[in-house]
Length: 286
Image (cartoon, rainbow, N blue to C red; front, side):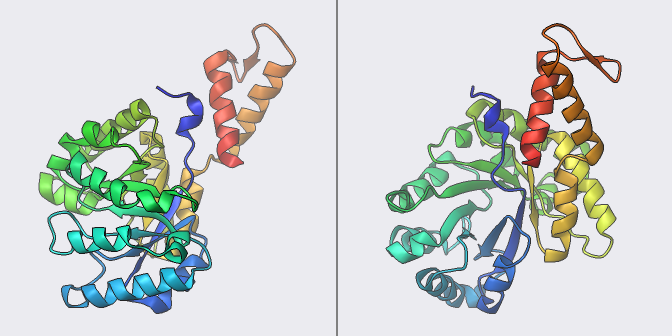
């Protein structure tokens, strides 16, 4: 168990961009997304897989305006070994442009450990490389405790489309909420940042995106994937504390500072857990 600072997440929004569209890389990186994921997996047709990898490696070698994540292909795909080899053989310049790796359809601690091993070279003299295990199946859910123990894992993410299909449940259901709850608990036990929520599919009515982001944050998710830049503002608004909550936190800490004994804010006793929650809220804003 780590202290409460482990709850803090390095990024709230992760925006996907297809690796087969190098013309979009810098546009995505110039967006409001906290992190950009260049996608070698679902966003790339099978007949473009090799070309997409070439585009990615060239972009990393030439240097990006800021480091980007990469979603590799799944362990059960014909391209997993190829992607592992490419990660292990990245040039020093490419490593400097790699912020992290997303492992889709994560179902085995062994596979996640293999990715971590391939990235060991990227950890020397460059920066720590974030490793995200994307849970998209019942097998993956059953293996989360073992996966959480892999050295180098940064956090979990949820792929609700594949997961809901595998479990034969609705995209928004108590079953998927239970998966989020399990990932929140396992992440906390392992000292990881809270899980990254599945991307919203709505790109027109952004109030829907924000409401769902608020709900997912309430479940314990600390970030969300995104498939379109238009979703980013709504995701940030949903995951960051609301103005009323920020004001409450400031009043709680102000009350705690002026008395060594009990204090009340809005009829609530300000004790240690309340004060720590207020501190966390203001830390998220910062």
